[in-house]
Amino acid sequence: MAKGYWVSVYPAISDPERLTDYNRLARSAVQAGGGRVLSRGGRVVAHEAGLTQRVVLIEFDSFEQAVAAYESEAYQKALVALPDGVERDFRIIEGID
Image (cartoon, rainbow, N blue to C red; front, side, top):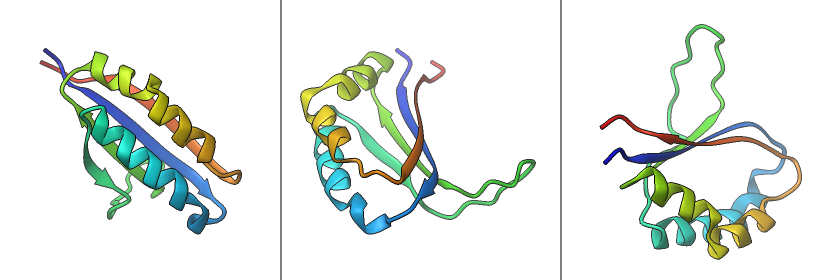
């Protein structure tokens, strides 16, 4: 079964300290949904377009599990806490078997 991944890229974060509530709630929701954080805002070496924006990568045992975790009540509460001024490109992708 192919794994599922959440990929988030943050082109703009106007107030990083306001992400605290979202991060706390999202971390709990991801763990409850079986997700494992593989990368969270670490170092980036950019090529081609040269974008070094914050990237978060989370792995789930399946694509379906990744979708279910996003749709969970716990994660939806976290999304409500995502502050204004945070621009995010979020995708759920299926891995390769």
